[in-house]
Length: 240
Image (cartoon, rainbow, N blue to C red):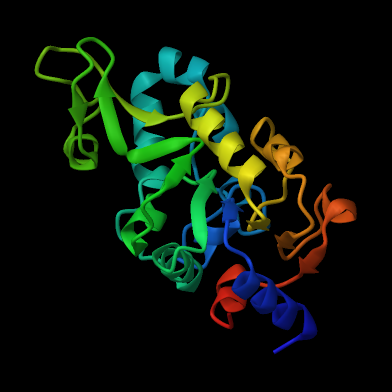
C-alpha cells in the first residue's frame, strides 16, 4: 500500500460526511469504454457515418433519429456490465453511514446495481426512457428490442432520459449535487478529467480540506487537491 492510499484510508475512517464525484473512469474497469482516452469511443474507429460527439447531440437526435438510436443501442447501453471494486466499496461506505452521496457523470446505473441509494446522475440513465408525447416511462428493454425508432403505445418517440450535447442538466439533480458537495467534509473525485462543464465546475462548491483526486492523468484541479492518486480507481478502492 502506498503512502497516498494510507492517507486516503485514514481520511475515510475519520470523515463522517463523504461525497464521491465520478466520471467515465469509474466504469472503464467494468469494461465500459470512456469517450476521450486512447481506447475510448471517439478513437475506436467504429464505422458510423458521423463523429460520436455529433451523434450524441440533441440536434442529431432530432434530425437523424433512427441513426441516433442505432448508435445509442450499440454504444451507450451496456446491460452486460457489472459493478467493479469502486462501485462496491462506495456502496459499503454508504451502508456504514460515511458516504452521503454519489454524484456521477455516468449513465450506466452501476452505482445502483452495487447497492448505492443516494446517487445523483448528472447526465441521466439509459435505464430510464420516456415518451416525448405522453410522458410514460419505459424500461431499457423497450429501446433495445425496438426496430428502428422505439415508439410508445400512443405513437410518440421513446427518448432515453440522458442529457445529450446541447441539452441542459436537470436543475433538481444539480441542486442536490451542489448541496451535498457543500456540506461534505471530504470530497473524493475519481475517474474524471474534470474537463467537461458544467459538471466539472461542481468541485468549486467544496470548501473543505480533504479534496482527493484519483485519476490516471492530470486534471485542471490538481493544484487545488489535498491528495492526488495516479492509479485506477477500482484498484485504489479495493485497498481501503
